[in-house]
Length: 136
Image (tube, rainbow, N blue to C red):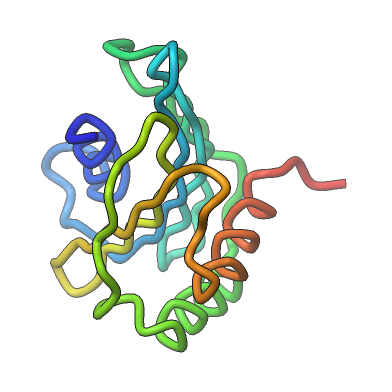
């Protein structure tokens, strides 16, 4: 699970030397292969698809869209309404999903077993998932 947290922190922090910006990521992974995937969106509106084919493999990132500042603001508002910052961190499981938020230089992650998302996070998780899908 620590690998997942490091992966998400790296994605949200961006390349070395860049000032960390605000961002939100959703990720699911683990199981037999240890791989997983998800999506992140920055406050600047950059949407990145995240993929890790198996445990120990380097994470793969693919920028898929720019200009999604309204989507970021909507998801951030959903997290605020859910009181994300005060939610319990949760526990990893065989297959773990999470939402990680970086804001004002701090990072916060809430995780759960796949299929058991906290009800208060379901809408934000779905909105992040939709951002990762190809545009029609």
